[in-house]
Image (cartoon, rainbow, N blue to C red; front, side, top):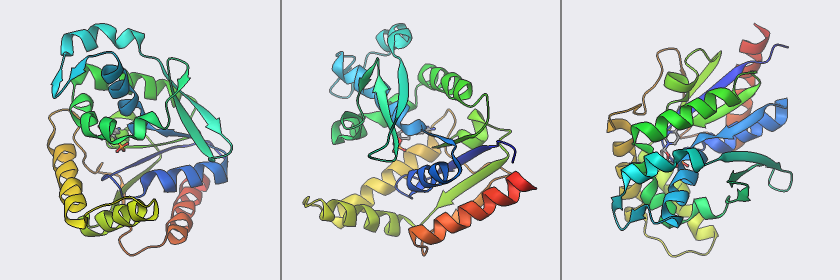
Length: 229
Ligand code: DC
């Protein structure tokens, strides 16, 4: 079967990475979480005083982009790759609220996006890759053989996040989570460079009323249809 490129884009918290990593494991493809790369740049900027409060020292970040090396290493325990920043595993640190709160403006900077897109395109040179993000089917791999655009209602995505946080024993307020989901949707779809939008040739998956297993089955079906076609 030929090795294809699979681009999975969509709104935050709609289960893109779960679907993508499960399919990658099933079919032996490389999985890349492109959001983790923007999070790693944000962590570098926080650790090095490039972000102070809400201010970003853009000139310093631009000058230091060459010092930021991001890589992935498969972690068999988690069944997905861990993110490394300059040789150090930062998988847990990039998921903190501090990084989540600062990543959107970093991901909106043109020079950051250019550097990340170049690196993502290099990773996908050989095919056999599944990448998820916001601009994979439109900018990173416009020629991907299979493009999926995942969506679910804001209420359902907020409810999933609420249930996840509750299961971890964290205190949370549904209305606050819903506001945060809606705010991130707005930022992702309205930024100037590479806003989140559906590629013209993407297949839409509204998973509002699907279980994880149903999504998995649907995605494998699409992969077989394209890779064998
Ligand atoms: O998917 P995520 O929540 O981990 O993404 C983190 C941030 O990076 C979020 O603000 C959207 C942004 N992002 C992006 O702009 N382009 C991508 N290809 C992936 C993520």
